Image (tube, rainbow, N blue to C red; front, top):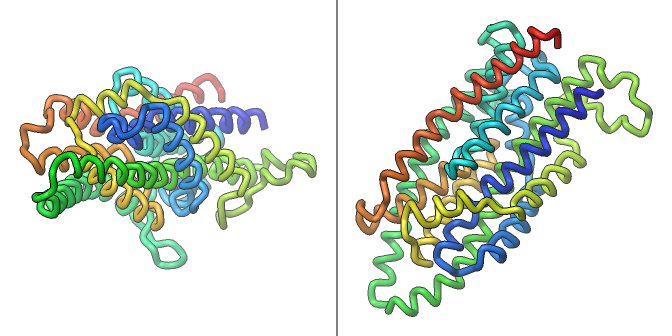
Length: 355
């Protein structure tokens, strides 16, 4: 039971960090275009994160049972996965790099699971079909979306911006800014909703995995009656208290803000106007909403970053500061292997000390 409480604490810390780490993803464009003040933008993002987090559980089910063999996972596995994701999240936040909290958690879970079964890679679900015939596993749910979602973000952002440019070619810049200054309030709210609907569910999934592990291992067998809500004998749904707790924690983290990454996303990468911010946010939020509805844990960071790049590149390639982009891409590339190694190393280290 003590180990589960540590897992729960680590999960909430991760969710809080995810909130302020990825706040920039939801609000950087609306802040950089000066449509909202940072304080107002954070309040909007926090509220919409909360609404989005309560909107569904498809991504949570993927994390809890669709990536690794849940029967081979124990409470220590989950704890080490969370710790590796927390370390990477804080490190990249300190550097001001918008890395993926999603991939940090998935990488940590995979590495920790492999270490738990003493190097047996069969614990990872690469590609399979669930009881309903839907595809599950790392290939369809993580690897393919890791490449396709940024590409969709870049192309979608560039295409939407190109269409808006054609439609608005006879409208004065003052009127364009006036219209999209208002429209961007809607796109920023949609972005916050998309962020919450995708990212908050990942922690819901990891907590449910811990509950299932504690139930099947017998760790919860002596719980008093009032604590019976902790028992999760099978994966039929995500407990309501988990959904509410994760939603509130992410909203609180979002309210704390993430100023280092906001500067990178909103100012250093591309200089944006309201119409460009609208195009980037609308593109990214649409991708996040669609993928969340089908249970694909897409990186909010990857999608909004490439949408911003696509919007900037639609005007001219030199509008994007490619040196900053290169640093961001390196953070993307390194996230899965580094967190996987961290998760693996933490489990082996604790095993060496008799855990």
